[in-house]
Image 1 (cartoon, rainbow, N blue to C red):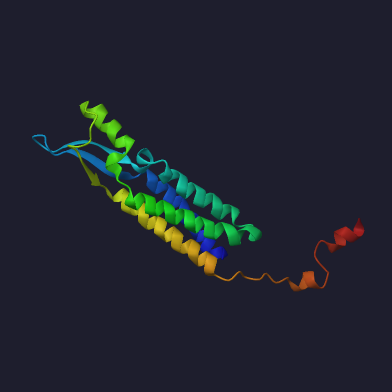
Image 2: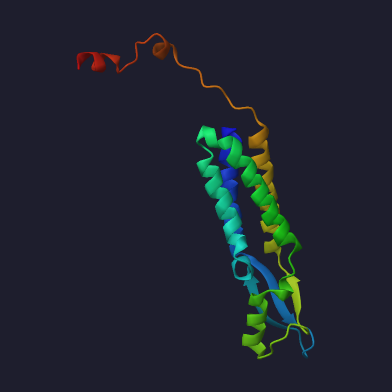
Length: 167
């Protein structure tokens, strides 16, 4: 479990960083030349794009305590899956960030004549999220390793035993 959990923790940090990539580009196709009004990053479109990877990261760190691992890792899988589904199925044209960008650039309060072009940031977010989910699922399925005591601790002659005896 520990190996997959370590890799999943690193993956969730990378997943958190993908929320700062460009997700959509807003264009006006009805002008004489196609005008790009601006690009929006995932954090501007939805705060959940930052919260979900952050929550998953915290759950993987807390899951290192062995008693909580059996509960937190499957919960992190469910939360990450819900976050991926939300981002993948969202209609960003109805997002308030898109409306604010259009209003600031053109003065119009409508999104009807504008087009959103998805950038690679959305798919990178979804793919790294899916990698994180698969690593967390592997950490859940993997059998925990039993830690065996060393021979010196079993016999009672630990290196600090003499110090305790002197005191």
